[in-house]
Image (tube, rainbow, N blue to C red):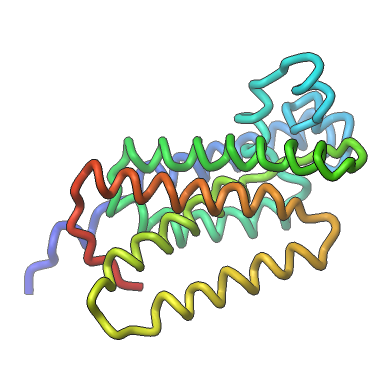
Length: 206
């Protein structure tokens, strides 16, 4: 039986993003330690005063290629592979890149706004999870679009998964849950806009 072309497509962008994250992590460890807060700031992590007062806006991009330790990196890269493989096939490479970067940037913005409004102490944050939550939001939108008119438990089950994931971020003070929520909402909205503009006939199933 011939193999359909879409079954053998390689998620080029997802793999490239993964490799960049791994290479950046190796560079961080080569020049210092990913557990050293000052070193992570030097490498481009989010530091609110440096963005708000020194206008170092590049940190809104560099922060989602940095990770605090190998476990942080591995967990995010597994999520990136699983979600990215599915979404890249549906949206295509260019839209996928736009979705990923905007989700990561707005996740960082959300984190900063939340900390300022809440009057929290200045924090240093980094990680691809904000951008990855953007993929999570995009997948939710694809499931909603793909299951229109069908009786299925896919969307409710996925919503439960998202809720549990966000709850775990709420109970762990070391997790930047504001960034996760910002990325999630961004990915959901951007995917909806892209689907309408592309007029995609989405038939994605988990």
